[in-house]
Image 1 (spheres, rainbow over the protein chains, first blue to last red):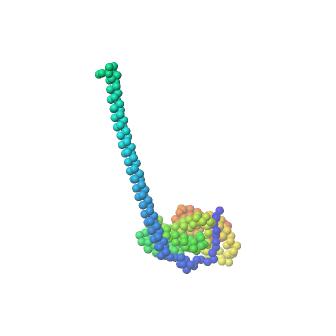
Image 2 (cartoon, rainbow over the protein chains, first blue to last red):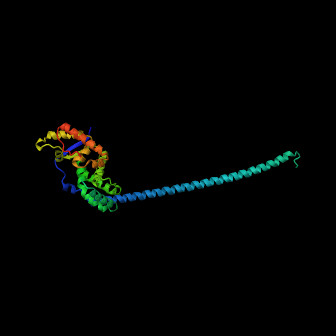
Image 3 (cartoon, chains in turn cyan, yellow):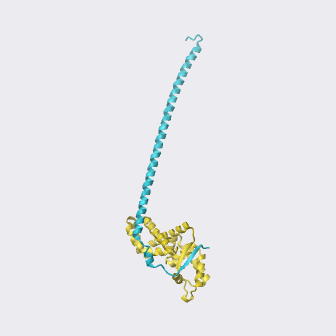
Length: 106
Length: 188
């Protein structure tokens, strides 16, 4: 089933009626405006992309710094732990030695 | 019918328009009236037609670089853009499509003598057309009121050539059966 309205016209459109709307300079003006808008949009998109890239690199640098900091602190902690362990083990050896001789004299 | 040479010439103008928009003026002047009439037959509103027509040529100019030569005249491309603009308009306003047809064209299509025309017959014909689906009316409009061949109709409506032929035959068959009248039809 159709859903259209059919109208019958007695007259054809007059060429002068159509000529009233024909305006090539107006079309050119709209075209130039459209091009400018397109260029502006491109510049905005370009700026947004650059900003996003800057933000991403900033985040990456920050994450890298934090990672380095973490590694450094882990290294320091492990150094301390190692030295503590070394200390502990060396004192343990001493104790063992003292335990070995009841007089406490080696 | 345009010759292959004429089509190539117009295609060259369109190609030039991609770099120099002023060159497009020639095509604009040549086809403005036809496209205006085509849109007007689907709107019956002069101001709206002027807007849609302007948008049609603006889109054509914007996409001048993208046009691919497929053996159809440049005008078919303009008709295709215009048809899309009209459909876009109706989708936006969500109203039934208007087909405004000149009485003289209907009389040319149906071959009966002037004396046989009556208000009753015209009303019956309008009622019949109202019942036709939009796609059939579009094909009929292009075939009989715009004088397009099936290859162009297929390109304009983005359907196959056989599809365009089938829609036309069906619509005309119905018309012949319902009204028992002869239709001007060259069968091409």
